Length: 455
Ligand code: NDP
Ligand code: 2IT
Image 1 (cartoon, rainbow, N blue to C red):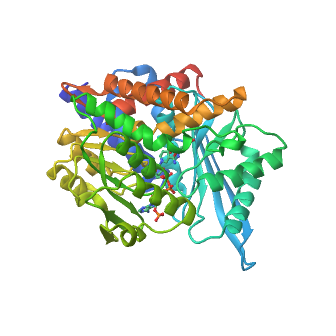
Image 2: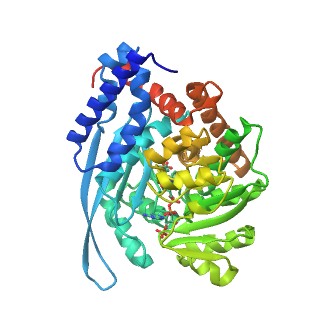
Image 3: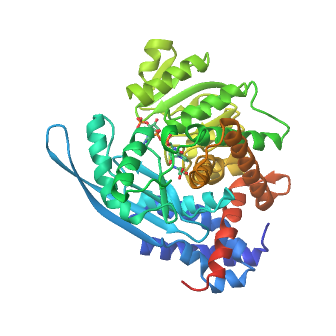
């Protein structure tokens, strides 16, 4: 879709005015501004001839969360010292289903980060085709270096306040950075105890107590399934491609695993300390070692080189390593404009975002200007929350589906998301997946909001 010059000028002016207002209302929240800007620059031109949405001020309503709950979390550490953290749940929008989205425990968690994540989640969940609204929460708690007992006491204290705001038809949290199987188990155990009921109010649970097969793998697998669909539009596939992955947590691990299944060669992984480059490739044995290192031993990626060789680059990110395909799977704004230019110059022709908002707007512009295949987070990493939705369905039916069944449903959902993005993002023979995901995600939520009238 392209507007006439006058309409484009009008849309640009409207976008500028809208962003000035949004920034004024949400001071000191740069990540939230960024997520909204990246969305609004596609949605505003789309709204140009859609008076009903404009009269209902849908964009203004969508960028204001339904509510934000902030609470104190007090716990005692192993030295018996009292610790105080801040817990938050952003219930962003429940127009198409109960609030759904992860919890992040990381030292830099703040309201800006949780609002950007909650906002993204609304449209990501809409793209999955499942009935889920959007939310996100977390705390400025750093699980690194904490004992199991400390993590347990923190999770129990966190849930002792959060439980009154969530429920299987209200708000269903899950994991995110710093919240994996161990934390979800402590959180769910405390929820069950406080409510005296066993319902699927958290997803990502252990298999013995209502978890779904493939949920652990889902975000990473989905991110590669989406990449495969994108490659398919150019008659290409993953086989034989050199791939770089950032991060070494849940999403990075299973992105790497699926790339290996499909015949790709993974040469990098990273953590907040730096990245490892193994020119011989991280094969299944090495990856199993990394998964154990990160989920059981809770070690650092630098330890890899002592065991398997390769090079460790302290304090650096992997984007300078030549590759065909790149998968940012660590955190927001980890891939900047110069990194994007380097990737393109080195011949990288696909980027599929496993993390949320890993690329800055300037980096995205480089990818779009060079017409490479670029799968934005809200489409490419939607597989995780999609399988969370399937976990909720299984909990409601008190059934559990097989690995094959869930994996097949995940694949079908990622294909549907790809079709939706193509539908709204086609621009001559180029597919702008950013616009496609933004518009396709927007329409469903906007129509529901319109139908409800003013509230
Ligand atoms: P994990 O906690 O399992 O792993 C996070 C990884 O990212 C670790 O390797 C961590 O390194 C690294 N990392 C975290 N913060 C930074 C930072 N500031 N700079 C550099 N590296 C950092 O989290 P997930 O794998 O679950 O999440 C990764 C990304 O994927 C996030 O953006 C998350 O929002 C997104 N996501 C997750 C989904 C899920 O199902 N889990 C679903 C969809 C998106 P270190 O160990 O040193 O901290
Ligand atoms: O960003 C995300 O989509 C997640 N962290 C997963 C959310 C979920 O509810 O499974």
